[in-house]
Every structure is written in structure tokens, then in C-alpha cells.
Length: 480
Image (cartoon, rainbow, N blue to C red; front, side, top):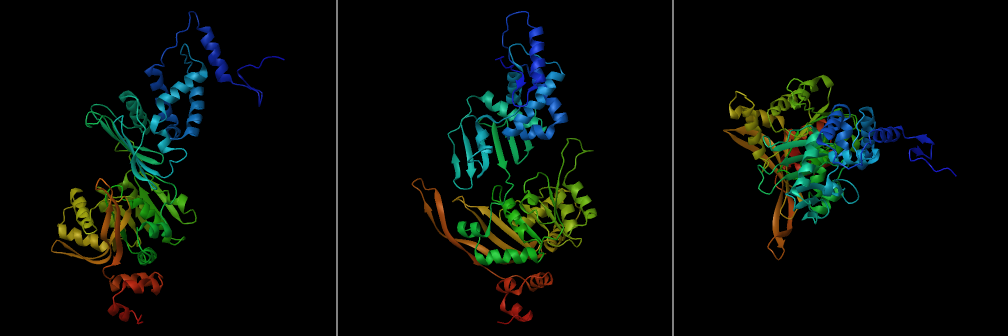
């Protein structure tokens, strides 16, 4: 029986031409005993530039996806054959593997972003080479046993992420905000971080992690609140969700979208694809739009550009992932052009504080108006504000819901609707809070104006009546 050639795939009886070609070239150049050399930075950089220019999406996906790395390896194999690249001491397969390992993969934190058990991990925080902390939906926040073997190993991972996302990371600019498929990553080099290199990863789920049942079970909201959320969204009340970083604003937004009627054309704008609304609700008329950052002001498509183009897309409703800068002015203008039922998120410590923050963003954008005029404009834009917080017991709760009424004498007027009140807390032996005891209570009522708006859009009176004062029930003809 003839021995099988290492270049023949027995299943289909095909010759691996790349491996055969590479073997032929290395044999041709072999004049002296082979000393295995390290693949040069020049070769790795040549491959990286080729991938960035021609296979950018695959390159980015390969950082966090094993199957994509295998596909990337085939692309690299073709490239080194076409470019006649030879490194003494390496077979074709070992050279490709070395290059792939140099530009893709996340080393010890790989298992935290993909694979079994990583589905419930939402955040990965690398604080220097010796400390890796994760936030898990089921386990909460905890320190892992994982460590990088050296600062150099951690630096390589940081550079892989920066290079794949097309961001600059140098001693002159020792930080980077990176976007990769399914995650947002921030990197700080040791130049500005006292712990060494810090990497903060926020993972975005393509599924919905929040449901009515999970809200009730975790204490995120009570049943009356859940019913009111349906009324607010179906009734096209403009909604603003606020809270600190990591409080679950995006997940709450994804949950609320379930109440948008399927035939409403809902155009949703994001700077980074985080919500995956079309994946979660394929039956709905959702059109996701994403910014494109190129580093060139002429070709960059930011939220301001997307918001300008929005009016030509015939929306019934408009959503914005988050407004954190000058684009807030465009968003407010669009939400005031008859597109009811809008929804967005923002950062704030309390629900009323959100309005002051929006006023400041408008002023920083160069708007030449009195702050009180801007405040009235914002209040006329939004109807409902949710505040969601991640409390000290690591549970995310909607701690405040208010209805905006007016803005006079530089003060916000609003109707408090719901609030979470703490009755007590359990602590561990170190004095850390492990569990809050409390409840959501109704603290007030919505206005007659909001009730009429919801009725106009077909919301059942049974969902609205518990939110109205007795006098307004009588005005609506809903006497019990």
C-alpha cells in the first residue's frame, strides 16, 4: 500500500496546493541547517494590513470567535502563498498558526467572552496582569483565578484588540475605545493606569435577558409597574431611560420594545450595535442603523448624520441607543416633529437630574438659548423618565419613574409615579450589603394629558385606570 501524501485530503482526494507550494519553496531555499526563527513583526504587520483592508469584518470577529479564526487561517494561508512568504523552520500550517495566534485570540480571557459558561457574563475587567474580575448575571461580580503570565502577554492582547478595531494605542495616545462584534472595549496603558494595562470589556447579548417573570423574581419591578410599561409604550409616550454606567439601561430598552406594535416602522440608531433588536424581534418592523467611524471627518457617519437622514426613512417611531453629546439637539428636534413613541437612554443619578444633564449637553453643543427655554423644550419632548440602578446588593432595579410636566424658574416640575423604597438590608461578615429588603410603591399619578394620549393610541382603560387620580378617572368617564 502506497503511503499517503501529507498534502492529500483523503476524504475528497484533493491536493492542498498551499501546503505543497510552501513545502516546495522551503526545500528550494534550504541550503543550511534550519534554525527556527521567530516570525518577524514585518510579516505579521503585512498580514494585518492585508486583513484590515480586505477582510476587516472577519478579522474583528476572529478576535472572539474560534470558528472565525479557523476561517481567518485559510485566508492567511492563501495570502502567504500569493506573496511567496517563507520563514525557515516553519511548515505552512505552523506559520499560519503562529500568525493567527499573533493577531487574534484573547489569551487567558478568551473563555470569558466565548464558549461554555460565558453566556451570562456581561462585563470583563482586567486590572493589570494579576487581577481579572467579571460581572455575571447569575453570580454577580467576582474575582476570577485567571492571570496573565506577564505584562508583555497582556500588552499583546491589548494591541490585538486595538489593531483589529482600527484604533491607535501608543504611548502618545495610551487609551482606546474599541468596537468589536458583540462587545465594546476600553483600554488604558500603564502610562495612565497605576495597575499596569487595564482592559474593560462590555459584552452585548443578541438575546433578551429580561422578562416579566425575571423582573418580578429579582425585584426589578412589580406587576403594576409592568402593566404600566405596556401602557406607556403602546400609548406612544416618549420615554427616557437613565442611570449610571452598568445599570442595565440598554437591557431595559430592549425589554420595552416588545410592546411596540409589529407594524410600526421603528428606526433605531446606535453608535455601536448593542441591542440586536431585529434578532430579538424578527416579526417587528425594526430598521437598525449603526454609525461608521473611519477617523476621517469627511467619511465618518456619526449619530448626527444618521439623525439627519432619519426623516427621509418614513419612521413611525424613533429610537436612539444613547445620546451623550451634541447629537442630543438633533434627537430632540426629530422627536418634536410628530414621531411619537420615541425611546432613548442617558446617564444620570436621578430621574430629575436627567433633564439638567440634557440641558448641559445642549449648551455644550453651542445652542444659543436660555437654559430655561431648553428645559421647556426637553420636557415637551419626553413624557416618562425611568431611573434604573444597580444597587449595592448587585441587583438591578427600576428605582424611580416620573412623568415630566413643566420646567419653570430653572426647576423641573414632574409627577412621581413609582419608587423603590428600602426597608432594610442584610450584610455579610465584612459589612458588605448582600441583600436589600424593600418594595416598589406607587407614589403618584400620571396626568390627564398622558392618559388621553394613551387612549388615543388604543391602550385599554384597564391599564390606565390604576395610574390616574380619582378626579381624572371621573373626567375620563371611568367611575368605578
